[in-house]
Length: 59
Image 1 (cartoon, rainbow, N blue to C red):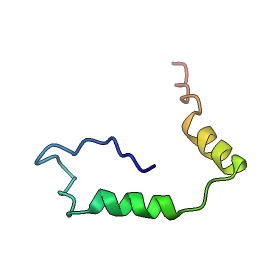
Image 2: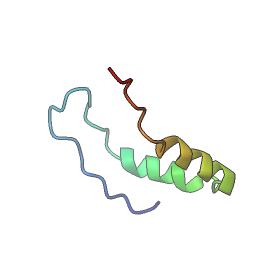
Image 3: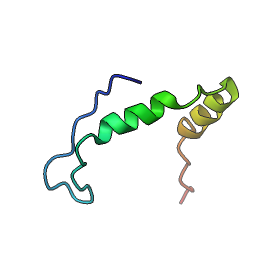
């Protein structure tokens, strides 16, 4: 995860204060030091994000 491809929030975006200098470099450094995820951990994360949307109750 050494290559970040994020765009900064527009100036004055609500709820998002400007990031201090070196913020994303610090985040990248911390993430790079983390141990790799096990296959079971990756599966649990995918399952959490790719669940089907809850269906609305029929009226």
